[in-house]
Amino acid sequence: MYSQQEIDDAVASGVISAEAADALRGHVQGRRSTVIADEEQFRLITGFNDIFVSIAAAILLFAVGWIGQWVGQATGMYVSEHGDVGPSFLAPLAVAGTAWALALFFTGRRRMALPSILLLLAFVGGVLVTSAFLLVQIIGPDRFNDNDQLLPAIIGGVSAAVAAGAAWLHWRRFHVPITVAAGAAAIAGLFLAVIVAIVQPGDSKSAMNLILGFVLLLGIGVFLFAMWWDASDRVRITRRSDVAFWLHLLAAPMIAHPIFTLLGLSSGSVSTGEGLLVVGLYVLFGVTALAIDRRALLVSALAYVLYALTELFKQFGAVELNVALTALIIGSALLLLSAYWHQARRVVVNRLPSNLQERLPALDRPAQVTQQAA
Image (tube, rainbow, N blue to C red; front, side):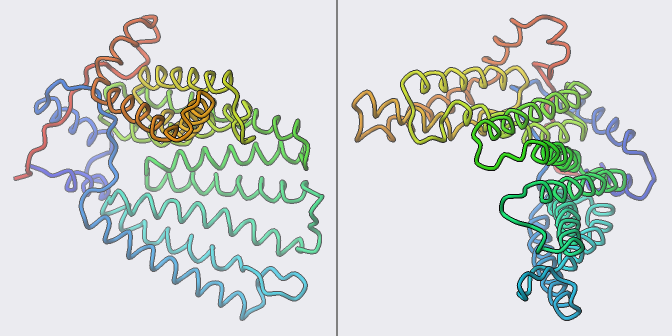
């Protein structure tokens, strides 16, 4: 009997291909499986050693970042404004380089889940910040002012493009599922920087609403991209499902936040009509979550519906118990939905057109029965 770690090690060493490993897992899973209610599974940790390595890696990355900043200050390679010592691009550069070096072992050879996620974020984030700091140092911080948003937008866009390239390079080398979402976030940041450079919002409410609308469109684009990955693995037994999970996690706040902000929930007051509209939208999000078998939308919009219900109960006179009543209703509803998720999803999916059903995750998917590797 071979363990998952041994199969991952065989893939890393080139003995078998990643496709062959996925096919082997699917075959074994099919022989050990039972049909259960839909579960949204993804691999975060393979054991406590993942947590141990992640803590150690975070400490090391903090240390090399600190040393990089010290070297930058000692050599004069830092952002300086009015004689003050600012951040150096050497600090995030050291973090990114160390993250890549650590990934060669812990991701490329050991295939450890949580450390791979941490190292990916450190690498892409380090490249992004390195690009931004270096550009600011080259251009000169004295050329920035509070009213001009064109130059910061250009720097943000260029840095996002470099970060997207770094994410692509990381994906080609390591194939960590969250890498695709990191690259998508960088590309979305690039487009957003272009819009900010064109609009230059300042304090204009209409300009900010335009940017929020564009973020919403980007979120829908990321959502459709996630659905493309989901459609390629309807039974969710390969890493493509994990890629889709992280993309949905990215798309959800990009969709939920602009919608509810444009409805005026950030203004500090909610009318009865607005509150009922928020609740209705949350129900729509719930139906969508059931259809695609992803819960990210429900989580991202949760704060808004909690706030809206709290305000509604306050307007109806339940001032002292508005928070408690809101928590009671939402908590009970979500627990009930979780308990009967499969049944509710079957009701929703069976009422959709057949061609759409064929693109959604399968209703009854085999799930692996946990066994100890001999």
